[in-house]
Length: 95
Image (tube, rainbow, N blue to C red; front, side, top):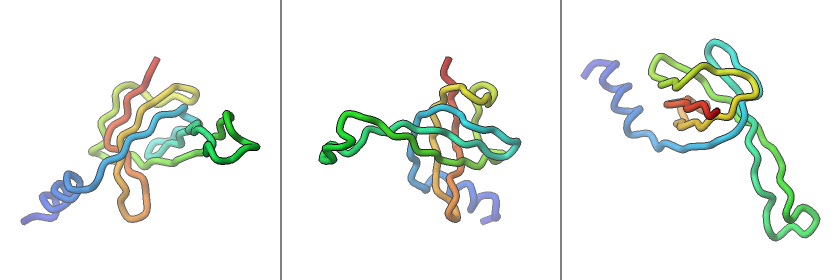
């Protein structure tokens, strides 16, 4: 089996996850997404509030892009973890 076939199989076998948020920064091979999450319900001080976290995603030749990355745009990202990095499998930009 060629290394390309092995990589393709590994990509299919990797567990995919999805997240939505707002693009905070964009580069040629990566972007950062600001994600709003609900605070833990057991925390009385933060209950009902939200806090933001950020995730950085790598873009490779296999990433499917639906639109152009633009700071401030809302996006839904399907990604996999590879070598400690979040690699975008697909990016859907929301209007």
